[in-house]
Length: 109
Image (cartoon, rainbow, N blue to C red; front, side, top):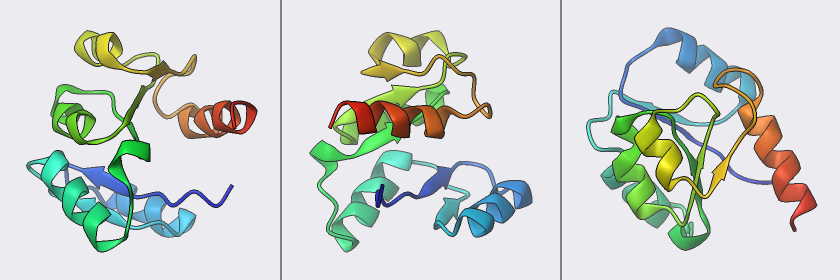
């Protein structure tokens, strides 16, 4: 669909890094404040944050939810995340949430 992606993670995890390499998308990990990093990345890459989708599942994703226009979550996200998400996948994290989101976006163009 030509939608640029990035993985932003608080953890430094070699599994996440390898997954990003396989998918050929950038990864920024070891992040304390996802909102600040996303603001910086968006500014450097001409991304309009009001149109950006952030998929998050845990409380450390709240700062990213504050800066992105569309908040998405897997079905098994923390309750606080589910309460403010604009879109919730029927799938659990790691079980095709991004593919589900792409299908949703394709249908609702």
